[in-house]
Amino acid sequence: MSVTESTERRKLLALLEDKARFLRLEAVRLIAIPKNGHYGSTFSAIELFAALYYHTLRVDPKNPDWPDRDRFILSKGHAAVGLYPLLADLGFFPKEALDNFSRFGSLFGDHPNMHVMPGIDFSGGSLGHGLSAAVGMGLAARVNKREYRAFCMLGDGELNEGQIWEAAMAASQFRLGNVIAIVDRNMLGLDGFTEETMAVEPIDKKFAAFGWRAVTIDGHDLGQIVDAMDDLPPSNSDQPTVIIAKTIKGKGVPFMELSRAWHVANLAGADYEEVVQILSSGPEGK
Image 1: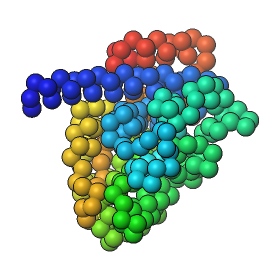
Image 2: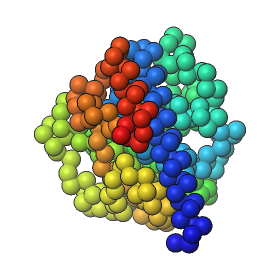
Image 3: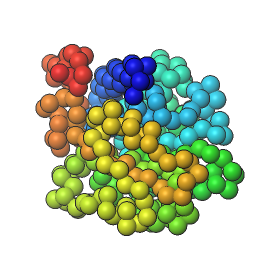
């Protein structure tokens, strides 16, 4: 790596770190409006969001329907409160629109709605459908001779859904190297630890058995995330890729980490101020 490349990489990682901190703080601010929201599932995905949108995805906020844009499907739609501030920051819509989060008539619900929000390619809600949508988009790219990729972020608990594995089989069958699945492996669902409620391991070997290229990374290490994204095969390749991102539910706030209590909850009073101080104090609240 040259000195110039090393300098540029440090600048990139510093930018992504700042954006990750910003997104956590904004998620806390927005959840305070309806006084209920998904802290844990959002915080585990923040570094992935930052790396995708500020480095990897080909998108154009001035032309959100650009036919050659990369598609992003947030299958774990309950983490959308971490995605909305990012889209506003990029210029998909005015930042002040976020102040109406979850209020009557707002564009922004707990799950994203592709019919009213620029920059959203898939409406969230019931889990398990996102990878099928990504496969359809990847297949459409092939039919229409376009080179975009379809990225799909999945929750690890969501892997219990049979439709996920039907989609995984189809992606391999149709040789869709333009389909990228990202598993937010935060270990914990609403009902408890995944390996106790319905074991999903070994995730890498299961996807590999369906014909996928499997990569495992630390989902909070921005360097590893960037490297995994930069190492993706060309969009016209034949093998879909799954990136298994090992994360911590509630990452960044010590008393939220790996706690079921903060899957859906509300911060108030001194707790709210404490979390803002933690997240404002430096990388990952340290």
